[in-house]
Length: 495
Ligand code: G6P
Image (tube, rainbow, N blue to C red; front, side):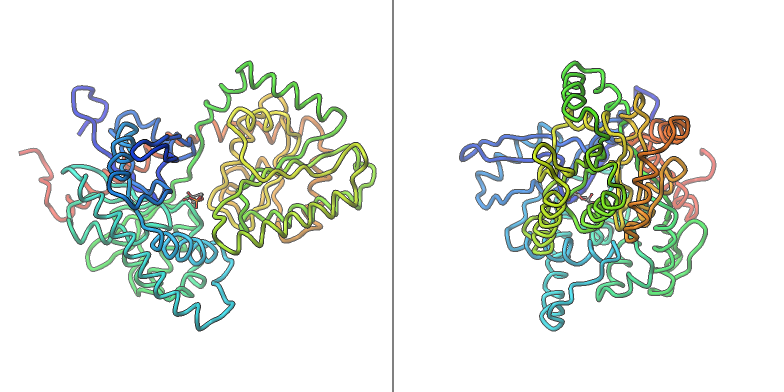
């Protein structure tokens, strides 16, 4: 199969993720307004010109009536998207419950919910049942749309049960699974009551991918220690079948950011921001308002910096964009109040009649405003307690060709392994260390900043999201061919 040959039909790729890259708002009984959200995964797939990709996922809305479902399915088809309809109870138990209250915190080393052990254990089982049921619903939609030769690429912790559901129905289906979060140490993973089921299901895939070698190594040791299987340099052996396990660090569409900086509206925005913050250094944080992002720790470190460096108090501002997320989960509601309280206290303490040290925004910014903000930033402050990769650090670097600002980056973000040499790495739990890094970053000589920036810029512009997706899918195709050769389903020489 030669993908470069334009005369051959493109290989079909079914991308399955919990969320479609489109948000749907109902306008009338059978009309929908759709808005595309261009994140890392979407831009990666837009760059995969040699594949005919379609997307299967939840549209993020409850559509109980058949007419509405039919209309939405039709509207989404134009965007090459296929919806999975989940009812409210399933969303509550599967998405808010098992995905975001159990797997998400555990995979980020924040433990399991502990408030009431007995009720947690009981609801744990019903949430796991809902998780399996939801995964089966995704599998049904894949099966309805599958054509022989398609490659199915499953994404993230929401769909760990999907590879098994797909292979049970059709053992020839080509399945890859990629995790966008960290995969924790096997000692953490073994806390999950459903630890075996999830590992066994993921192993049904032909290729399993992670952002870093550490996550891949943790997965393999979870399979050896919890399932008693054999780990090999290629992956995990299970009853004669090899599941390939490897690291595929994601990137961004860096050109999209670099090109945006040339646009007149972005240039105007940059000018406004420069005027607005004239005479002050700009520090920036951009995070979903999630406990893994370490926002309270970051703000406390900024407070400590202001306390110890009074000469900087009216010369620096921290802009913290905190995008609301998963607002139905109580832990996220608590975090929001906690952050507001700390910001209020610090602004009360160090603010003056004309300026406050922290601008905290509870909302997302549009793409052009975000690019302008990245471009005027002197120091980006990323203090995730754990983070699969963290692409904000990549986006910041892509927009810094003229400013060459400093990146302060948590050593617990996957990005620390790729951008570490061009960043000030910090332990976000060590508030004094982060405060000292802020001081170091603000005082860093230009030649040192330039050297660090060059290192990162080179990495970000060469390890793009398109390259990531192309590598994963081609490795998946190769893995399958190798497996067929091993079991001699494919002749070694042309006959
Ligand atoms: C993380 C996950 C994604 C998820 C995103 C936003 O990056 O890895 O799978 O889509 O957060 O979270 P949400 O719950 O709003 O989809």
